[in-house]
Structures are given as C-alpha cells and as structure tokens.
Image (cartoon, rainbow, N blue to C red):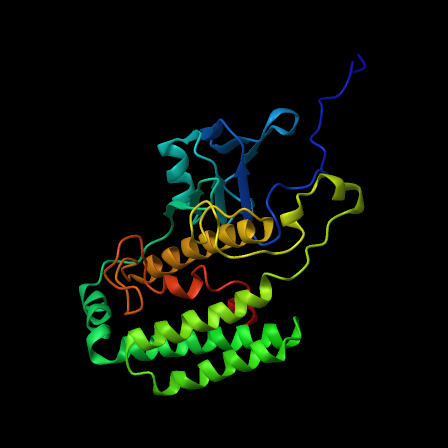
Length: 285
C-alpha cells in the first residue's frame, strides 16, 4: 500500500537563533527557559515575532545565553543543563543593568584571593590600574584622531596619558581617566547618527547626534535618552557580565576592587575598565 504522505521535516535552511560567536539573546515578555524531553526549550519574543525552539545537548553551538527581560522564568533543570554544557547565563533589565550572571567557576583558592586583597597595598594593584588606564586612553586617543579627526582632543588625551607614568595614587589615576573621558565624550556627542531616509520623519531631533553622555533623567549615564548611549549602556552591561564570569572562572572575587572604585557598592574588580567612561575606546585599544 502506498504511503499517504510524509512526515513534515524541519526546514534545514532556517537561520539558527544563535549567532556565529555562540551568543543567543532573549527579549520580550513571558520568557521561558525549561527542559523538555532532554532538550533545552526556549520561548521568547512578542506577538507575531514570538519564537519557540529546542536545543540538543550536543552540537548546539551555544556559549552565552543573554536574557534582556524581567518577566519569565528559567527552571532549575534548565540552569543545570546550561552549567553541564558550559554555557554562561546573563540577565539584564531593559535599562541595561546587570541583574544576574552565572558561569563555570574555578575551585576556591584562599591563597589567590589573599594575593588579590594584598595587591591594593603592595603596589601591584596600582601598577595594574596604571597599565589598564594607559591602554584605555591609548584607544581613546587613536579613535579620536583617526576616526573623528579631532587632533586637539587627541592631543589632550595624549598629554593626560603621558602623566600616567608619574601618577602614584589611585586618586591621581582616576583624575586623569575622568578628564580624558570629558575630552573623549565631548567629541563623541557631536557625531551624526545615520538613519534610513524613510524613517527620518519619525526620528526625534535629539536622536540625530550621539548626544551627551549625561542623561537628563538620571544626571549620569544611566537611563540614556539617545540610541547611541543606550546601546553603549547595554554593551557595558555585557562587558561587566563578561568581567564577572572571567574573574569567577579564575577563582578571583569580582567584588574586590584594586583602587579606583574599591570598597564602594555595586562595583566589581576592574569594572572601571568597562565603565560608562570607556565607550568604544576599549575595543579600539
């Protein structure tokens, strides 16, 4: 007897929700991360863009699961699945604040953490701060000079960077970093943002430029009112989560600073290297 039909097959050409670097980003409301028949089942999105898919334990290609939402759930069995296959899980709110980050951890070594704590007082921490800020300012200078073609701001940052060599306290390094940020973001605020011509009539006037790093809603970088700085806040939150995951994987304490923002709430080790003053300069450096 001839078969009446064939079973429906999954379209092999359908694009994977996981990007080429192994990152899967979840957005929307009612997000679900759970186990079904041994597979990780994920549901996210809004309305017609709602999606639901499953990942097998082998061959999934997932390295980072990033959730930008405060509505939904992840079951304990799903978290165990992520831990077993070495996938990091990060949760951000819609303002770009890091709420939760988990990933592989190293064995707790008290000696390593003791060296970390002593670094602030024996000069090692100060040298680490100096080298990292030097790399950051080098990137800012290069970006301002080569991309924005502002030789005056670039020279100002270069002079501040040169003073790092003789900066002998965390306060001095912080002062130089802050003044370099003023010069850097002073150039960035006037950069034009390109929009599709079809959308120009719907774009607010203050979105045509990168704009000020200071938001009128918060008096600081938080709660950005321009797309450029909103994207920067999101990127910095991702960088903070990566920083936390890397430190934890090495057995270090993310809450123990090295001098620039030490012993203050809501800070992590070396967080200032990805702080709101960093902008794209860290990548350029």
